[in-house]
Image 1 (tube, rainbow, N blue to C red):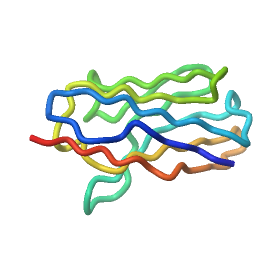
Image 2: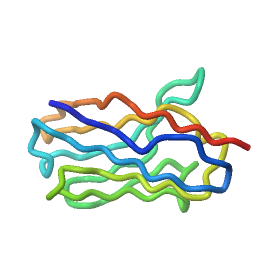
Image 3: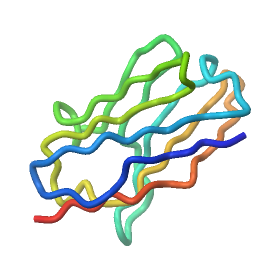
Length: 115
């Protein structure tokens, strides 16, 4: 199983980035997908999730700024990040969870927001 995250980089405050996570080795459509982030020196936290049916949930800190979507035909989940803030800085990880609660993690992609 592989989850390949990409799209991270350096962006100025107020800017946008779009992360992608492409899965292989799993039946993607049967897995809920979640983005987590790990800010420098802090614990990993949930950012946004999307269920197999397309239902979404977001951390309060990103509501109204981030959107999550999935393309089951491409085995890919996306995180569109707008109006970014320095506190959005961190390593972003994608997570896949099956209906039997088995989980898989990607390798992470670094996002840095400069003020």
